Every structure is written in C-alpha cells, then in structure tokens.
Image (cartoon, rainbow, N blue to C red; front, side, top):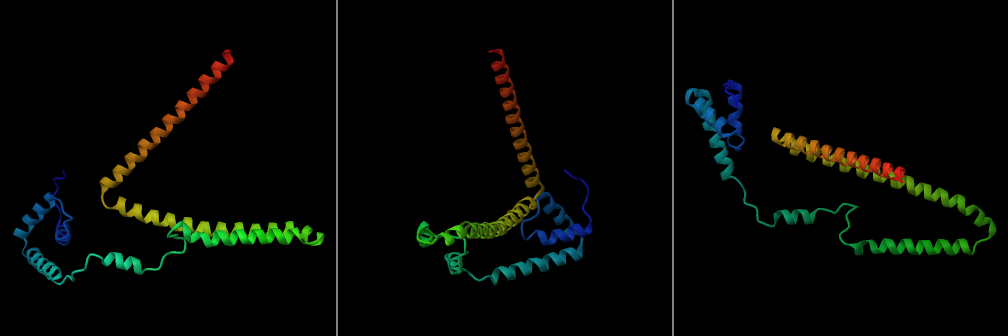
Length: 196
C-alpha cells in the first residue's frame, strides 16, 4: 500500500468522488482526517453533502415500465429482423424474380441470349460490390461499438486491464501449446510413415 500522503488538490478531488462511492476505505479515512484539519475543504464538503441531499430530494420517481416503453417507442434498425417470418416477403420476391428471369431467358431470341452473360455478370458484379460496401460499413460500426465497450470496461480500473492482459496471455499460451502439439504429432506421423 502506498504510504505517501496525498496532496491537497488530490484530497479536493476526493471530495467530489466520495458521494458517488468511488473512494476506497483508506482514501475515505485520509479524507476524513484532512477534513478535520482543513476549514475550506470541510466547508466545501458540507456544501456538497447539502447539494447531494437536494438532488436526491428532487429526483422524479420513474415507473417500472419506463425503459420498456422507451425502447418500444424507438424505430427498429433496418437490419433487425423481429422474426423469420419478416423475411418471407423478400424470399418470395427473390424466387419470383428468379423464375421470371429464367422464363425471359428461355423464351428469348439468340441475340438476347448471347448478351445475357455480359449483362448477368455486370448485374452480379454490381450486387457484390454494393453488398461489400454495406458489409464493410456494418463491420466498421460493429468494431467501433466493440471498441467503445472495451474502452469502458477496461478503463474502469487497473484490475480490469490486468485481468484482460492475463486472459490474453493464457489464450496465447494455449494456442502455442496446440500448435506445438500438432507439430510434434505431424513429425511423429512422418517418422512412422517413413519407418513402414
């Protein structure tokens, strides 16, 4: 444990962290010792406690279903499917368009049939390129969201960062162990096949 006494500015910061429960027991006891000796901090502490009581008294009660009602009122995202039945119309449209395209190609003249592969390849290329762009945007948004979530979880305390580092280290060790085991198994299989 660090025996160094915190400076006055650190103790003033602790005044604002104490009502939120952000201080450890040792920090709280050091703050209480400081409040007993420092008149300015003691007065500011009393003002903060009065402000916190005022905020607690002015809190508006929210009924239990408030979160559910707000989430139900939001429009759903375009990629969200509420049930597999919602994709039924799209699947029927694809099937009908495919049947229609097949009938048109089947009953067309030879001039149209010779141009069909070029037009088809162009249409498929357009479909693939637009799908790739949409997928890239979705992936970028997903990674950004994951980054924000990891930043929030890992930034809360040093212990979270250490636990994450230990987890990654042991996963790396596990991967190396599997790779080495496979390499020795392959080498053993080679020696067995050469001996036969």
